[in-house]
Amino acid sequence: MKRQRPGQPAPGPGPRGWSGWGRGASTYVQAPDEWRATTVQACGLWPFAAGAGTPMTGVPLGRNLLSGATLCCDPISWFQRANLISNPSAFVLGKPGLGKSTVVRRMALGLAGYGVLPMVLGDLKPDYVDLVESIGGQVIRLGRGRGHLNVLDPGEATAAAARLTGDARAQVLADAHGRRHAIVSALVTVMRGAPPTDREETVLDRALKVLDDTHDAARRGAPTLHHLLEVLRAAPEDVRAAALDRGDRSRYDEVTEDLEATLIGLTGGGRLGRIFAEPTTTPMLRDRPVVFDVSSIDDAQSDLQAAVLLACWSAGFGAISVAHALADAGLEPRRHHFVVLDELWRALRAGRGMVDRVDALTRLNRQRGVGMAMVSHTMSDLLALPTEEDRMKARGFVERSGMVICGGLPAAEMPMLTSAVPMTRAEQDLLVGWQDPPAWNPGTGTEAEPPGRGRFLVKVGGRPGIPVHVALTGVERQLNDTNKLWHELSRSADDPAFPSTGSTADGPVRG
Picture 1 (cartoon, rainbow, N blue to C red):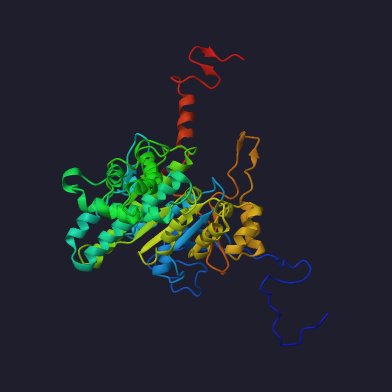
Picture 2: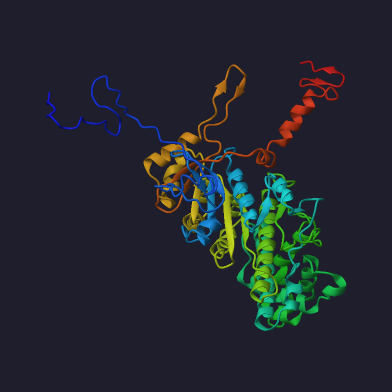
């Protein structure tokens, strides 16, 4: 044993305590708890000797699972204020029931406090209706017998164009025309399962221009698909020239027959009903938060769901374009929007050509002054498309996103996910562990909370992911309850006015 020299100071403990047998050295040092406070509340401790390890710019999302520090995170703040990402968009992945929509709702609520307008362009659950109503937003209900969305209605573009002059006015009108042309082509794609031909696209473009020139909107209201079908049947000279009928009406009828049949299906209550062929029930306002409630459309009607989602996206981005045009002219204040595209996979599977239309939306969000959150379950949803070209484009949605937020995912997803987002083995194991089923509590006879509920990994490029737990406040629990129907069923079962399970009003059910 080495002797201590006279006058030499006694050795102190190391970073883990006194080393040696029986001296209490620790092999694990617990991370200290961290709190966040204002400089007034923590004036005696400020400035801190060391900064926090997670970004503090944006909406408070939750606590870092490793350090306990608060994580503030949303695509608009990280793009505009923190300069942490180059694209104001987020892609959220995770198995059902683990809180994907809860994360997006937290961002939407926080951004609304910053003055950003949330826009939920198609709520299928509904997950966002209570939130938008609570912040004074507009709820637009669509579905069979609930409401209509006229895809040829230019919305506020006509009124905005009247307030503008010169190139700005022409640009607003051209954007409205292009948007209506694109959504009609998309509806044709959904009806057929394949996009219209090049000649049919040209005929539609020319027919819409003729309709705008001849339709008296002041007296008859906004044009509808019925009016477009009338123009196609009337065969004006400009439309016949686009069809290349060579002066032969029978040739024109042959070229436009399939297009006419598809429009009849869209206006006559076919597979997509009459949702898009009647005047708009509730016009959209561009200066308020908005949610399109399409929860009345059953999951079995996948074509109708996809068509409605595309129509909602078209209407929403059209309103955003009008708002920016008026702001550029100094007629209105500049507004930013947080657009939520939930259940993205439903629209992608509607038919060939859908990926291209969604791809165009996701590439222009930075130029449009729009933050975007896209939500899907797994990478398999995006890569289960029929053609390799569509699969590559769909994977690009994840690759181009400024941030990717992942909840619990099965192990089979990891090769596909890591091909788009670099992840370490530890991060992959974390996501796989979060997707485990909940444990059974024999004492109460109920299931415990799933291990991955509210837990997410925030990834930005190749940087290390930030594991975070999202905890809800009391108010948010009311706004985020997606099992209301089950609660109502439980209350009904306890109510003497309702028969109990396994019985009828006349008595117990007998086998």
